[in-house]
Image (cartoon, rainbow, N blue to C red; front, side):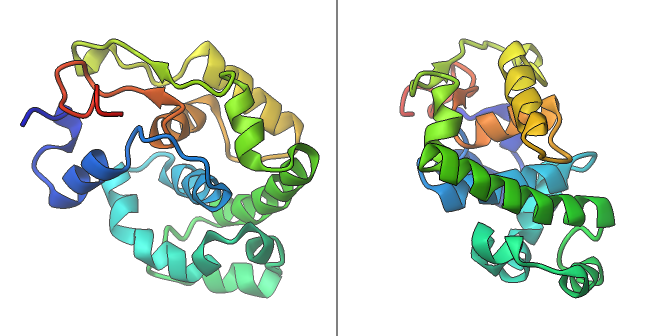
Amino acid sequence: MKRCPWCEGNELYINYHDMEWGVPVHDDIKHFEFLILESAQAGLNWLTILKKRINYRKAYDNFDPVQVAKYDEQKIKELIKNPGIIRNGRKIEASVNNARRFIEIQQEFQSFDKYIWSFVNNKQIKNEWSHISEVPANTKLSDKISKDLKRRGFKFIGTTIIYSYMQAVGIVNDHLMDCYRYNEI
């Protein structure tokens, strides 16, 4: 079975590739989870984040944005000391801020899902890449979404983070054309 080459050699990567990556997400908790994880991943390897994902679920109240939005300075200090997650103070503070902004978007659009999918008219972008080197790190669309989120007060949410997020939640299908998941999604 042919897969995208970035996932080869690690069972955790393979499972993520086969089961989640590029599959359209329409659940706000999952959207929030990927926003937190993609921000945490900035400057690091995605495999590092996948290995810590269970710890993130525990530390971040199963990625409930309402709970995360209530985190105070004491909770932030506790998270910074948590060896099970990425202990970057700026990323952790941004995650709490972003939970509050996430809720504002939910209130304005009825759900974050409606907001984020409106950028693509509720239709997945199916790219046609033959080689991993063709897959971009960002696009005009990720620039646009990042800019809008920043305008709404989100932090640590640049265009490259947003493009990775778009891949993760299936807004774009960036499986290579010869990958078995390309046509399944």
